[in-house]
Structures are given as C-alpha cells and as structure tokens.
Length: 101
Figure 1 (cartoon, rainbow, N blue to C red):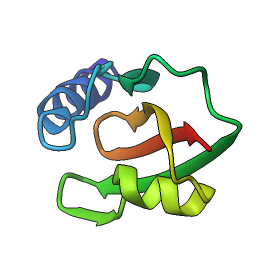
Figure 2: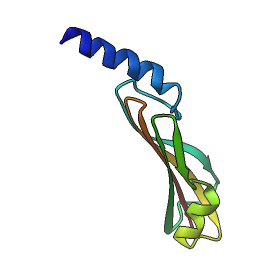
Figure 3: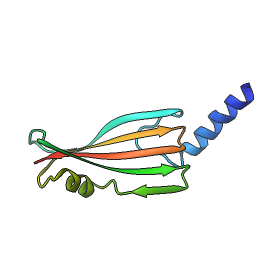
C-alpha cells in the first residue's frame, strides 16, 4: 500500500509539469487568480470560457478573453480572472472569467 501511495505521488508530481497552469498543488489545485483589471468598477455582466487538458496529452477548448466576453455579451471589459482546477496534474481545467458591460 505504501508503494502504491508513493507511486501515485511521484506520477502526480511528474505529470503536473505536463498539464500545469498557474499556481499548482501536487494533489489538487482549485484557485482563482487575477489576470488584468482596469480602474473601472466591476462590470454588471460576467462571461466564462474554459479549456481542458487530460493527461497532458489532449487539450481542448477556447479559454480566451474574447471567448469569455462574447459568451457574457460584454463589449467593455473591466476585469479578467483565471480559475484553475487540477487533480494530480492529470486533469486540468482552466476558466477565464471576464466582467464588464
């Protein structure tokens, strides 16, 4: 059992370099980080766009600021944040969150 736990940790550490985004924990990551802001107050609309990476082998999605703004119907961007979720570095989801009007 100890060998299995050690092997899981080693594989997780090695694989997290392949599928890494932003601030990472080895076992689990669930963070929201700022990307950009203006001097304007937070917008009344919010838009999100996501990308997913599996095993560091397959990455799909459009997590651009433009895609998030379109989904939220935003023309004037005020803030941009990035949410990152990772499990053992084997599954990673990155979401761009845009606020504006």
